[in-house]
Image 1 (tube, helix red, strand yellow):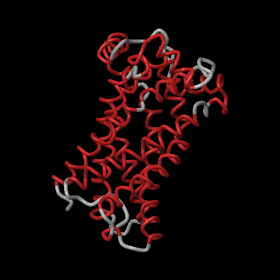
Image 2 (cartoon, rainbow, N blue to C red):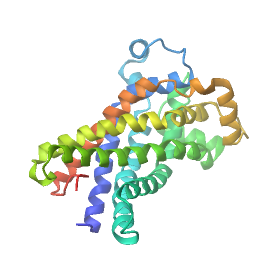
Image 3 (cartoon, rainbow, N blue to C red):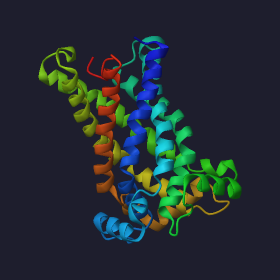
Image 4 (spheres, rainbow, N blue to C red):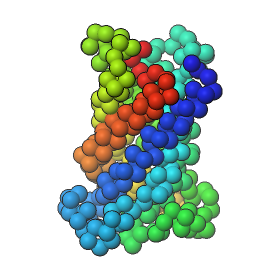
Length: 293
């Protein structure tokens, strides 16, 4: 099963699972990012969408969708595709006696490290577009051009370290919790996974994904706030460490949790559908669903 075509299918599955789902929740992400940067900007999510919609229409509510789609498509390919590759290499080839959970954690961390390098330029543009008023740029192309013109290509990667700090723990929890939850569900049901239909198996993937999403949203939220702040409020010549120290002094510990309820709903739903889509894609190609072996 572990062939180039299998891993290629997993890479494509990651694109299919992540690009469209992240784009679909752009309205939630837009409001979350703006409230992280300025907690007083809106009184509620509904008030935010009404206000944005009245001024800018549907385009305003989905503002930032293009860098979201492109960035998270690249990231999804790396996240899911490289996870499958590293899980195989660590668990089957290099360290066959490695505990299963350690394998899940190591494989997901390795995959996310690479995936974020592809995501970072688009995340930087997305956050700047969504958190500055008036917007830093009106579209992805303009945003990329402005950053490169003013800061060089390095400007697109100035948020890479905090992005790793947010995404690597997030993905470790996402994959390890998913795998453990799915295994627990099948153990509780009392029958091997193969005895259930494809529809039932993908239903288990959806449930496992939602449980994983709640956990990883909570674990990574302080870093998510810091990434938003860094991309919108980092001063010229200021190192990442200096900027994070200054931002933390301004917002405090409580400020690191701004927007958490919205993010739990967003990431829980997002992760559940990602696992559903990813495993449906695998079933469509005649491959086994993830976990529960």
